[in-house]
Length: 542
Image (cartoon, rainbow, N blue to C red):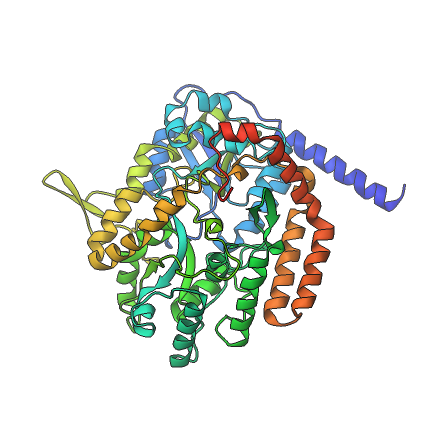
């Protein structure tokens, strides 16, 4: 037997072994009243428990244990180690009872191989889960896979206010732009140059890297051209095009290339991991980002509190949403500026939690998921504990300074419970807003008012058809490779390694290798117009 054939045979044997391991679990629950141990692997979404907090035994997790009548044993890796450990776990087939991850591609691959239970029968009998995960949201997770099983519960946008856009540091607007927001791209460049001239070590514009994507939460210049991620697809003239095909993208990249040459763009824009990026936000006077309302508004007062503790203190630093440009770049149609909202994507793009097909306690594992979706946990996330994060005065809850204050050295803090929102979503909007308003009334109100146009604009985008497109295995197999190739050509062009002719040649070469992917997807959209319309889909800009 040739070595290549032997290797293939070993791979097939390995896959059969994994599939057998995944499907060997019992479907029976524990005896009535028996308290069983449920194991769970989950991510902390970048917000870890403080040192001294046992992930499996603390006041918040105890709410879930009490709800489900189980002993919950959690493995929560460090944020920076999560992707590697999750991938190894899924590849092993030796899964705990419950798996949570935001790396959807790996989870879907395991689901297609039979790693997870179909949750439909549990869901149908669970009013609580149906409240938090509406039927449409549950259906969208089914469409992640080729098997069309209801394999996971998504993170939902329930209670999350809609809106996404460009954010700017208000103190830098006041100090270096006379309190006026730039009205066009050149106005932003002039503002960046003023910051840099006064602070030679400043980096007015930085990029956060996540997988094969650059400019994650840092795509302001791209967003002003209507193409916040060149790897994404955009509707134009009756079909979708990949971002790198569009002249708007080329124009945005030329601006970023000039910013790189002028020292306005971080020289490490193509290599910054999240930790390095967030450090530069604080220390290098990064002036603008892109983000959602639920990430910005619930942090205004917290940020001001934290800045007061810095050494030296950095008063006045907070973020607001920029108004729309008065003059968009040449060739950019305002109707294609898609300010995304939760109405566009009612579930988080990545976060999923599933029950292993290998579990011996499926009923109890489901009760744990219900615990994560429970009103009790949501209330604890929102308000914390009486006498610590809030007091009751005249029958009304009044927050203390501890509520939502992130002290990584306080083992009795509350902020870390953010990462328990794997089903509800990260924060209950109405409580968060009220707390931030109490902490910093003027600053919060300015940030809140700055976001109102985005709420209205975001709702106009409608429900995206991309929620419904099924997994296509041949595209999934090549997707990461195609995205990485786009990132490489963008990095080379911005940094000056290739010129515009070289970039255009690289795009043409990319299209020759990968354009078939979007052709398949466009055909699916064309063939499913009636179904999409029945779901309430509206293609923005059509």
